[in-house]
Image (cartoon, rainbow, N blue to C red; front, side, top):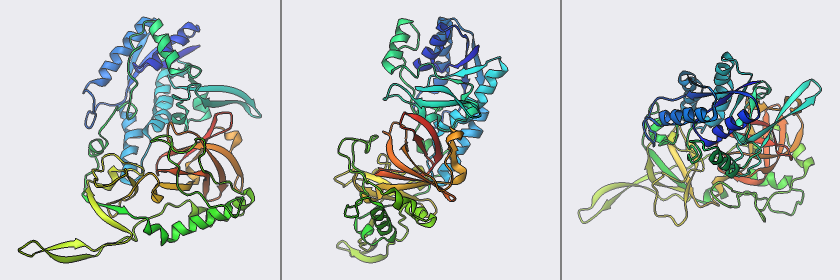
Length: 461
């Protein structure tokens, strides 16, 4: 069998190629260039050239043919243009997920097949298994053995057709084992640091990168106070609805995320969770579920101005009147450059705890923020995936309208899996979490897994 390895110059794809060669496959390597521009990148102008040089040395060391393919046109059209479009709408896309679906296992796969490849292999930390179903072979994606490096999340949009051609040689290894194999084989990439940032673009200054197409426009940063939620109809509705779903009617609903760490909120010993009544969830009508999944909006917070005199010369100045619900605390360069849950880059001082973005209003160019990890606006209990955005890797396990299932879900890479109830209705797939989730971000992918670690499907939030 002839296998093409996507050789990036990193240690993971290098060891993938090494293992396949040792296993007796007819292996060749192909390096893909997907990006030329350097605007907004934080590393050297020719980083891809260095990666290509290392990849070519690795191929020579292993003893396999090496080729180069330029897929930058397809990458711009199918990944980067999508990124710009999503950010312009106030959503936060995941380019790595799109890169795997549109480039590595589509454009790159086709280029490899034109060179005679039967399969394409990558250095992803995940596992693939084949099982027989009623209609033939079914391919499964499972989490990688290394819990600190599992990359199955990034493959959540692949189809059965793409999986049929995919190989993941290092999914049964841990990162230290991969490093050891590379060192023992004296591969040039053995000590190379892991890549960071946007797939094939690298680590970027995101606002600078986005300003290639999206113009900065100054606007207000509004801090939202706790009093807002006491009088907000949507927050009261969510509280009352979640309370009605609890198995213990006397229990208080948990609506605020217990904080563990920056990328590991919830899923730890002692975390407070909601215990639901399945019958109560099933009894919810579509309209109630839809409203439960809606985020809280802050456009009702408005500010009136007043004129006052300042200084010994009594110069007339204008200021905002005090508002119990919020306060204008700063300025920003454009709401579309910020994402929900973000705390860095706000340049907001004078607070005891960290300040987080809790919402962005693109039409009015306003960023809403809240202080502290336990701010009410930072947590949500339910999200919705539109019908057209639901993707099943296991088509044979697809849910039917009216069905409920218990799965484990993650809404971002490296997040511990979260217990949740999935409810499929005609107006979408609703994910009701046992524990509130911090920083649910429109445009990102929610991915659901079976108890044995198999990734079953995904959808755009």
